[in-house]
Length: 113
View 1 (cartoon, rainbow, N blue to C red):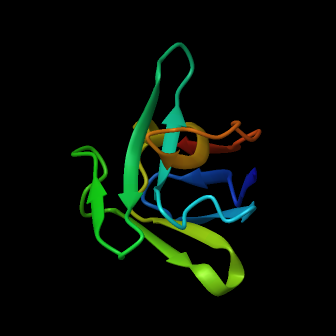
View 2 (cartoon, one colour; view 1 turned 135 degrees about the vertical axis):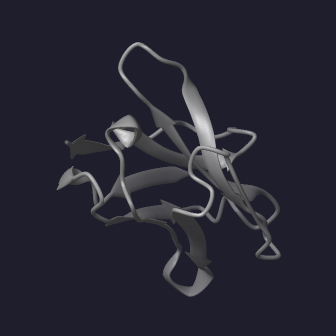
């Protein structure tokens, strides 16, 4: 299984970004897919999850601003991030929930004030 996150960048507060997670080996057939993030000096935390059936859950800090989705035909999981805040600055990763596959490199999101 390989997981590759992309789509990060520098954005002003209030802006939007869409992250993509391309995967091989079909790791999410029986597992939920999740987006995690790790800010400097902090732990890696789950921020959004989508089940194989399409149900979604979000951390309180991103609920109402982030949307997770998946396109099984394209082997891709997305994270639409709106109304970004400086507190959202972090490296974002995708993995199963719970995380059970090797971590990819992640994609850096930097939100400026």
